[in-house]
Length: 297
Image (cartoon, rainbow, N blue to C red; front, side):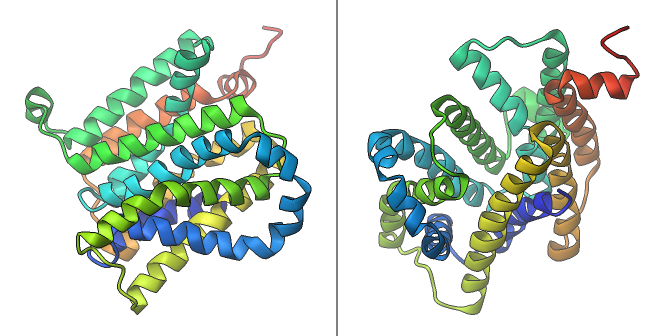
């Protein structure tokens, strides 16, 4: 569980590294294309066994692929052209809160008072991050466009997560990753073609291959599969605790590998976002344990 968030955080570093190296839709398309090719030998038999379920639920898979691997696959790379890896790591950490809010809006799930407090804190932290801690930007709505691409990515991922839970498809996890990646390629293909037609081609060189390989194998397959394995071993409640390491890893890797600088507004935003997400999303059992309360008291 300590390693899985590091794999996830690596996608932020890849996105910043890829700026000027490989265009965003090209990176997203070839990332999932490579992941599909790597998975294919291990999923062919499983895919054949589950053909009836795949045929029956094809439209659900297409929707999941569009949000989970299509929109969420390309928008981070667009945003990371314009904003920092540290901003991205902090904004991505808000995804559990976004999932909770969308669950409440789409499926009328109840939000407790404690969760509402956490949501307010997290949103306040997001405002600090996207404004760079500058009050005049808030008043004039002068924000970094890259941050809004990232917020769009977080929203798309939240929709994917909520729908994945709602659909509850009877398909093994590794096959689910494979087929949603394939569905995502269908959505990404026209945008990739349009990007190429406009002169933003994917050049065949060492940096391009490095970016695509790390995005596909480390930030893609290793991140998804290790986290899914951890979910089975220790359960979602405890596994979710380790996801708070993602912004810390993102910041650390950005400083070490990209020469990024941690600003005061990052610290203030993080001090609001991370506790806010924890308050909003941690199970009551864990909150009671932290605060020293029990069901009996």
